Length: 221
Image (cartoon, rainbow, N blue to C red; front, side, top):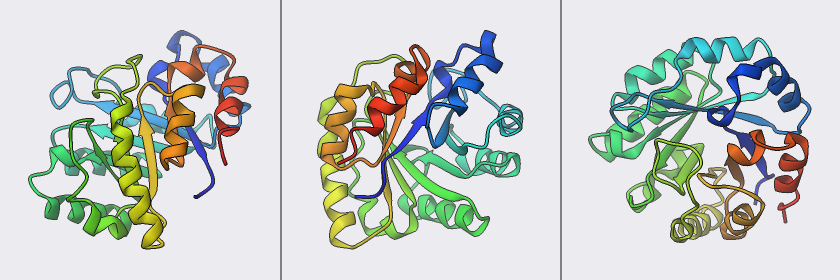
């Protein structure tokens, strides 16, 4: 398994205390910063635009992990490429077919940005498997996307195990990320199933960040 990465989601950040929270984030040991971009259509919530990403890049050196939950991923992805995203993960469900999904992955990678594909809890991963070489990350949602603070859905771990076996058997570098209800207990289950990238929001930003991130990093085998 690849080295474990923790990607705290700023969806859970207290935006009345941005400077203090970023200082703590920068000292926490987290390697990535996760941006949940929602358009109010693909999911029933509205969050961050590219200018927010541009601003955060001025105050942290973290890898910018951008998850776009939007109806028009090709258009929105281009905005975040220009804003300085390091990884853009879009939803399989927002693509008309697997061919258009793969085409967007190839476009992102040709622009020097890592490409990720996400699936909702009820979406199968079987049509992604033949194309995993085209994907830097597969993001398994362990809650229904749209809002933070939801309870972890353990049934999604079957998809993680399926992906992990294929990635291992084919000696691929594709990372398996999981997002939704992640804490020390659910994170342990996710890592045991094969996840190597954990997104955590409330668990990190609603407590001592350094301790929370360390508790997740300790899950690495």
